[in-house]
Image (cartoon, rainbow over all chains, first blue to last red; front, side, top):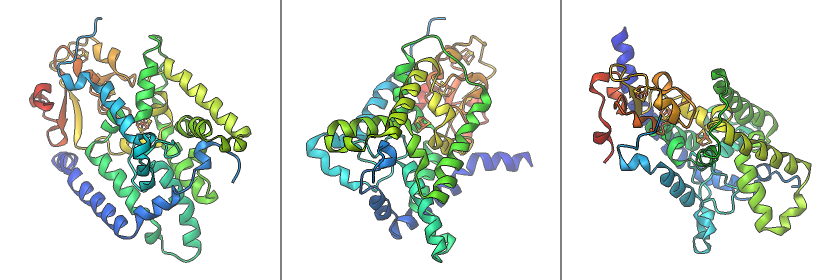
Amino acid sequence: MNRVADAVGRWAWIPLLALSVGALSWGLSTGGFETVKDWFGQLCTSCIGLTWR
Amino acid sequence: MKCPPHRSPWLARRGWVQAVSTVVLNLAFLRFLAPLKSAGGFCFPVLNCWACPGAVTSCPLGALQHAAGEARLLVASGTSWLAVIPYYILGTLFIFSVTLGRFMCGWLCPFGWLQDLLAKLSKYKLRPPPWAGYLRYAFLVGLVLVVPYYTSVQWFSKICPQGALQGGLLQPLLHPELRGGIGAWWWFKEAMLVAWLLSFVFVRRPFCRLMCPLGAIFSLFYGLSVLQIRVDPHKCVDCGLCEQVCPAGLNPREQVSSHLCISCLECQRCPQGAIAAVPVWRKDRREETVGLEEQVP
Ligand code: SF4
Ligand code: SF4
Ligand code: SF4
């Protein structure tokens, strides 16, 4: 059992990285980049702390 | 005890790497590079506020809060849960978490650099209790995901000190027309920034340790990410030097590569060579830990 846990600890990064790259590619192909760009297209009043708008 | 020099020129230049990273992430301050600002969709996972007039990358925490706020409206209008997951933001975050992990915090984050700089002003340091490190997960779940989901307001951004510094101070300074929007909340936010800046002098990396949700996301991967740091107990002579130099205020003998370690590698100054960075697939082979000279060109 310990050997299994040890192997998971050492090699889990490979499937995790593959999943993350998959998520990123899917996100890009479904317009994720443009969506984020739209959100940040105007000044963020929350970040700046301004009270209007 | 006198601190020995780094055995690698790269490690000795961590401050310079942090400075270069801060400049590169804010290149739009240069007039001829200002068009870079329009590429706002590019998320880079360090705490560098997109509201900064010079920022060229967007903050994944801001993006996650927007995504959470939109998710509720989309689900209410019949969109499936699978379709509202922000794959692009999560994919970016997880790729950096799995590969570099908290190396981002130790070497590339501008807000981490600011904390390291102010920490040099005093030798007297307060030490927060170990459990305080878990508050970061509460900020992540509460103010980045759940509250923005129900209110569609970016509540973490509302209290983020990096926003107060890079956006709150610089935007009204450079754009006088914005000053009309300054009200009670702005003053409150800037007062919190002052309190944080003071704490940076007397506590090591307090924001990273108590509040940063981005560091919390990296920490979720701390045992699995490619870069690991290990102590060889056979070489350690318990001199305590590593504890003295750790900018995160940890005891590296017990906490190196823990969820609070920022992977800065400062503890590799160990005169016995007991601490070394190793790839995760070699992480338990302590006797064979790769020496510093082999790790860093
Ligand atoms: S934990 Fe600290 S260094 Fe890491 S992203 Fe947050 S502010 Fe930056
Ligand atoms: S790891 Fe190195 S620096 Fe730290 S206590 Fe042991 S011998 Fe000293
Ligand atoms: S334990 Fe070592 S690598 Fe981790 S934060 Fe402290 S000095 Fe840096």
